[in-house]
Image 1 (cartoon, one colour):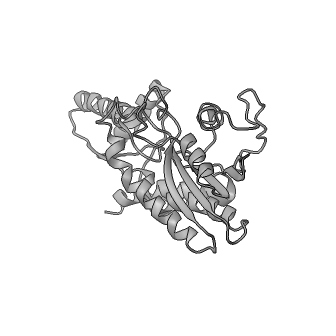
Image 2 (cartoon, rainbow, N blue to C red):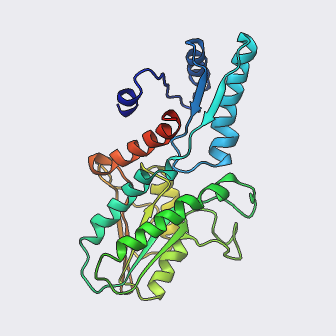
Image 3 (cartoon, rainbow, N blue to C red):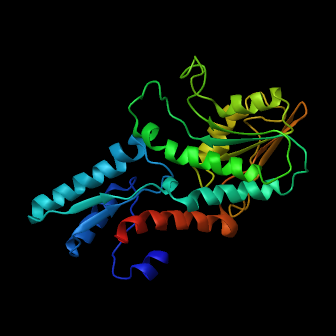
Length: 278
């Protein structure tokens, strides 16, 4: 809607990289229609070599080069910035956090964990994610610190935890902070509440509901990997709650539904608008 309203003459297509035929066809159809400049974007909050530069973007370039060779015309390709570079993306997650903070009593100690997916960085030191992500994670950390300062809480802390690949196998020296360790350190430090939101997802999925949960909640009282996940309404954030000693741990979910999802759409639009408006 926003793209059509703002740029009614711009053609666009959505392709699934798991459907190579349609992916190839949609790019060819765009170029056959007379497109001279192709703007690529990805629905990932932050780009990586694994998902984007060595996958979706790379193979899109290859498809364009194939079309150029067949048609004798060069195409300009621009990669739009990731959604995580847009303020709207951060604002969606921050609204989830604010909605929770509004329910908490004054005087308590609160630790906030922004969680990322994670990769085996020690094995992939040249991953583009490592170079790009700080612009996002540092900004949303500062945002959360400023938001927490608006409340009459006691101690507050904001960290970025890594759900996957920060374990004893991939990171035996604990170079990176796992989300699980961020939780446990919050308990050990005596925080009343430890809150967590995964800032690289905006829909629940097999990662967040199963694999990452299994890693993050290992040995948590009440957690069992075989527990049935009761999540009937995907337009409401899925939440989890655990109590360890005197600490309440809350997983607050992702920006879904009418209250939060518009921020995701705005972030994608803003990413493309930063290119199309020039």
